[in-house]
Length: 357
Ligand SMILES: [Zn+2]
Image (cartoon, rainbow, N blue to C red; front, side, top):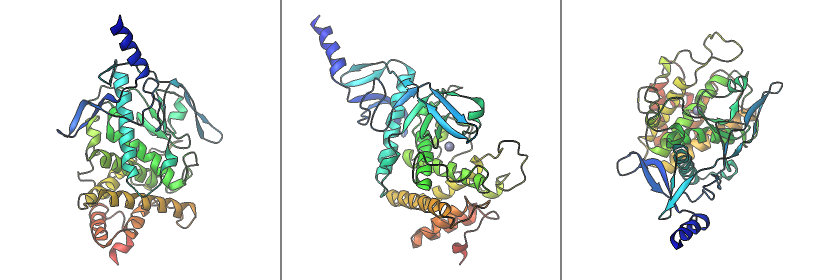
């Protein structure tokens, strides 16, 4: 009797200090189920914390007149777990994924905290698990089952349709990738609920879409140190940063004739991978991660500023022009690396003028 009362009180009054999660085990450099702290998760029963809250259900909608997106909040996600030795053990797979997701969010924010940029305004970053999405709304969103919804400033997590090695929401790189979209939106527009950098009918829409995907993959890589982090969940994807991605192999390229209906058919990932591989190539020669991160963030912020101010007019290759600003912000040795990577990966498609001076 005393034992049970004790356990009951423990469960109610003491919050666990450790959580069972799916995370990268640094000893074997692979995913494993392990125990770790998640200090930012203040209420694990309801998945609430300083980084944001997780909601289940609700509805993502769209105002068709303005194409403005909205999210009608669902209820708090309830996680059932048992606490043993101050460690919370989730009782089902969804709970394990929720804890893992929060841990990855925390590691992504911790990495960004090492930069000189003040990114406090990106938080809290709430997430909607399996919200209702009308077909037409979905067509305005990226086709990923983890996604960032700009202007609404929420992540969406959908149940994996097919069983994965590492579930998408428990893949640290995928969480980093999605956070990358939030970061791109914030750096280029100066806010989280601000309108997108470009109108949907802008000439530069497709190339900037690829840039956004590429930089998101770069953040996924930087958080995990795994150039092929997507393969932990989706082995069939050709997205590894350390493999051969050449712009001249991408077809169609932005601006190529495309059979477009109501919605763009442009696939942003192949060219996105060229951006990501270009940055990866330079990073693999660089021995200063913090500097690399600052350089990328400075470039992206400046890119947004130049476009928003009208200094850099809309054009088909607008996304590629990010490379010019990247080279402008480079140190001497970085410029050599960057120009080399750009020359080999973008040959015949895009040239950075200051590299050939
Ligand atoms: Zn993405």
